[in-house]
Structure formats: structure tokens, C-alpha cells
Length: 101
Picture 1: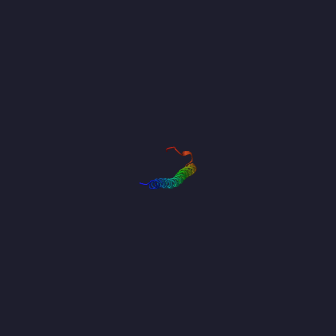
Picture 2: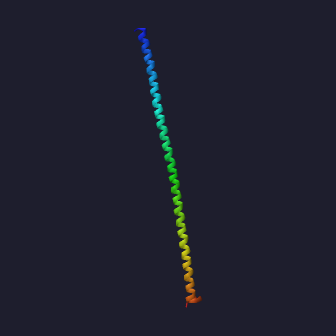
Picture 3: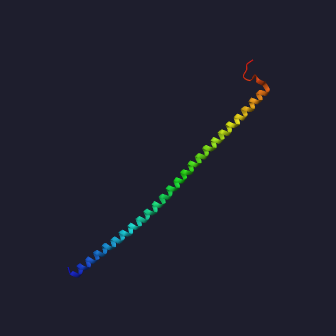
């Protein structure tokens, strides 16, 4: 083969290597960009889930507090009712309460 042909083949080979490396770099950049985008979305989802869990915990705490308040109100109401019954019994039956005939 002639020297010109060998030089041309050598240059084409080098050019092909450069083109290949540029293509690989471009692919790597696309992959990195895609990965970064996915990581950002994943982090946003994690934060959203953490906030949702926090809100769920707060909702549970509020429900517990509400049920505790209702229980206390019911207990107070029963105590008032019992006091009223005791007062009624005292008036109606005097000090005989608890005594047997």
C-alpha cells in the first residue's frame, strides 16, 4: 500500500476514535443529566412523604387529644349527674341513704 493511503487510514482511524469518544461523552452527559433529574425527583418525593407522615402523626395526635377531651367531658358530665342524683336522694330520702329498714 502507498504511504498516502496508510496516512489517510491512520487519520480516519484517529478521527473515528475522536468521534467515538465525543459520542461516549455525550451519552455520559445525557445519562448523568437523567440520573440527576431522577435523584432530584426522588428527593422531592422523599420530602413529600416525610411531610405526609408528619401530617399523619399530627392528625393522630389531634384525634387522640379530641378523644381524650370527649372522655374527660363525659366523665365530668357523669360526675355532675351523680352529684345531682345524690342531692335528689338526700332531699327525698334524707340521711337514710345506705341504711336498710
